[in-house]
Length: 113
Image (cartoon, rainbow, N blue to C red; front, side, top):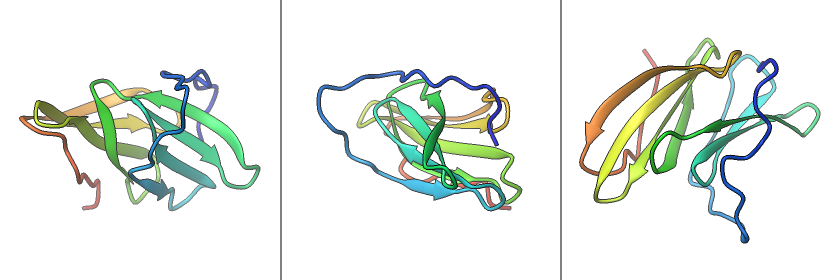
């Protein structure tokens, strides 16, 4: 579970946004939801906000937890311009890996082995 992570949104929109993807942690009561330039994490036991992870460039399209639940990967970018996949440590919120320098938004990314 996230510990003392940011709860301030990276973007505050005047209107609702589309949710492109959601993923549940395999070991913790945690739901990751794509948003506008951010990944929002909710505690599914309390239905409260657990953390917000800013997406580095563009918009997140897909999220996936590692089978251990320790890492969260999100892919996305700017459609027709650039894309990449990013991996965070769920407990600390630290960005631990960036993969790809694509010419389009990343639509699927997974940490499955």
